[in-house]
Structure formats: C-alpha cells, structure tokens
Image (cartoon, rainbow, N blue to C red; front, top):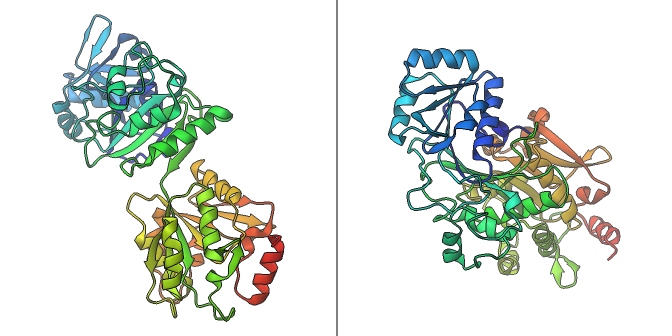
Length: 448
C-alpha cells in the first residue's frame, strides 16, 4: 500500500509531520508518490532541516521567489520545496504565518510541512516551543521509528528523554518498551502537543518490517495508541520501501444483532445455553473479546431486558430497536450503526445467534481490512459468503437510506468491486440458529 492511500490524502490537504524517526523521508516519499500521480506538491518546513536533505527534492527554491517561477517549477518537477534561507549546513524554514499566503497564491494540490525537529533520533518528546504546526493543517502525522525499541531512555537515543521520564517515571537509562512508545505518541502533552483541534491525526510507525515478530510488535503498539479516539489510525510500514505501508490499524466498531423474535425457535434463541453458564449471545460477546474488540454495540429487541441484564457486565453498549418485531435485520443494523461513535472507521456486523464464531476468523477479516484488501470484507467457505462482515463507514449512508423492504446485501452487492473475500477453512461462518434443528446441529458441530 502507498502512503497517500493509507493517510487518505485529498487535494487541498495541508499535512504536518511531527515527532521523530523518519519525518523527512516520509514527507519526501509521500511527495514523490503524489507527484508521480500528477499532483502539484509543495513542501516546506516550519523549523529547519539539514542542507544535505535538499538533494532529495527535485526542486528547492527560496520562498520569496516570484510566484510564477514557483508555479512553473511545480509544472516542471511536480514537487517543489520552499525555504527561507540557507545558513551554513542548515536550511531555515518559513514562518507559520506564511502558510496561508502560500495556499492563496501558489496553485499546488497539496502542502506538506515538516513541523518538528529531532536531531535524527527515533522518538521525541517536544520542548515547550515545539512542534510548529500551522493552524491551517488538516492532517497531522506523528512519526516514530521502531528501532528505538530496546534502546536506553536517554538523550543519545530519545529527543528530550527527561520530559518522558518526568511524566511517566520510566527511568533514565532503562530500555524502551513497546507500551512506552504508545504512551508518548498518544499523550496530549507529548506526542499530540500543539495539534490543532480540527486536524485529523494519523500516526506513522516507521521502520516496521513487512513480516515477522517486529510487525506483530508494531501492531501491538498501534492498538495501544488507538485507545484514544483522537487518533484516527496508525499506519505501519517503512518510508524507504517501494511499498511503504504494510497495514493501517483503524477504530473498528462491532454491531451485534440480537433483536430477533425467534419465531421459528419458539423461545428466545439468544438466551439458549451454550457453553458452561453462558448463553449463546454471551458466548458470542466472549469470542469478540478474545479477538480484542472493545467497541461493541448490541442491538436488542425481543427479550431486551434479560439480554441487557446479562450483557451489561461484559462492558458492551446496548441499543434498543423499537421496530424489532417488523423491521427485520435492516432496522437493527441501522440502529446499531447510528449508535457507534463518530471516530469509528468500520463496523463488523455480527449475528448474535452465531455461536461458533471464531476469534481466528475475525482476526483474518480485520487483517484483510488493515492491509487494504477492500472496503467490505466478507468470509467465504466453499464459495458461500457468511458472517461476520466488515463494512467501511463510507457505505453506512447507503445502508441508512435503504427502504424498509431493503436488505444490507443490496448495498454490499452494489459494490462488488470493493469486496474482499477471506477464504476460511470451516463452516462456522455459515452457522446461525433459527430453528431447534439448527441449535442441535450447531451444538454437535461445536462438540457440545
């Protein structure tokens, strides 16, 4: 995956790179991607960079050059870096107040800004005057380099290490651990210091290999970072690679449908016993927890009171569907989607009566989405589509606009080109409980 896809760049974006561990290389790689796609890319810094960094810029001009000359350079090179002046071996950046003037007078498609300095280190806590992020910024990318893991927490390896120790007491000289990196990056006073309130935030964990233990470790850091809704996603990869992004972790919500009338069962199927003292719906929630999903909304209807009393201790959100008796699955899905918080990027739609749901298959679906395989991810067993299905937020308005006699599959089938199928090795994705025969069969298949 490319950087511009992972960061979801659109024309008109003003993107500021802060932190440490590859800001310049990430900015340059993104600029070359966009220029290669025909965009007019303007770049600058509000701090300063090394003079040797200019060799990576196709064109570098003083900011006081004639605007027509800068525009012509954009036409010729696609990527132009602007600076204030050169002093010795340093290139001085422009004042933040000039950003609005650049946006108004130069016909570029996007503006990239290196808004921080870190002496070439891989992790940073800002000082009081840092970072220098212009108010016009629409996307902030905090960067960290994973090679800092295992290094001592000191000024030779971490910019302003003392500030991190003063805030968390990790201990100067102790080896840096994965959770420490996550805590620094998600902290309003450290990694998110100075970020404009209206700007999107996408963290970049640089130096993530495409496979192996370090990729798993990077994913752990990403999930810890995303405990705060302020960060919309964590991009994992290596800026110097041809395909720099291996995956993007985003906020995933779960809509568990548990409102059905159980007409063919003759009794509330969600409350049927399954394993130990758990009912079917409790077992489903337990499997979601094993898959490390936390933002879970359960849509209730029939027997709502008892289902709610059983599930509330499990830390889920409850949304009641008043139309459960006549609205079918669509009405419950609409209630569930509307109940998810605004920072959620995609919804995993789970059937509350699918007791053989497996965390391993759930994680296959989540990984396919993180790797950019598609915007709708569905499991498939022997060419049969099953559940759960992950649906990117961009398709929610279409689902919410469906008429009462519509079905979620109407939207899914309308976007066949955006569906990615995950082939699974068993039929657990097909087994929900509608009848007593289904219940008996599913229990046998589960070995109960």
